[in-house]
Image 1 (cartoon, helix red, strand yellow):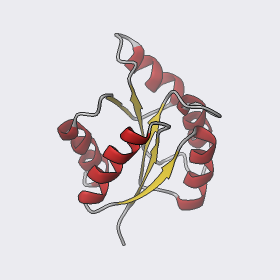
Image 2 (cartoon, rainbow, N blue to C red):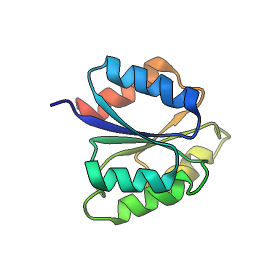
Image 3 (spheres, helix red, strand yellow):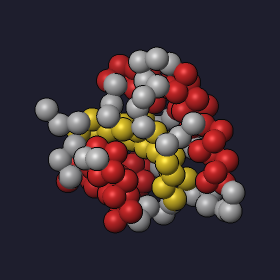
Length: 123
């Protein structure tokens, strides 16, 4: 059975790009368009990895990541923040504030994105 990766993004183009890259690498995807949906799906499916946009409607990614990291059933799932906020200091702030394990800037760079997937799922 393929490992599941939860992709959380309110932008359809970003969601589609990440879905294609992940599925082409042989993994299954679960998708959410906001943080609230992400929390529900993560608890339901316990994915091996989560890519979390930080700016979304309903519930932002920082809040969702904090909830998931505080929940015993989902606390150990690596969460990778994906954001267009790539200003100096943003990376550290997002990772620290939300408890994310890593950060991938947008627009998504295919090679570095896949390197992150491999790092967390293939060691």
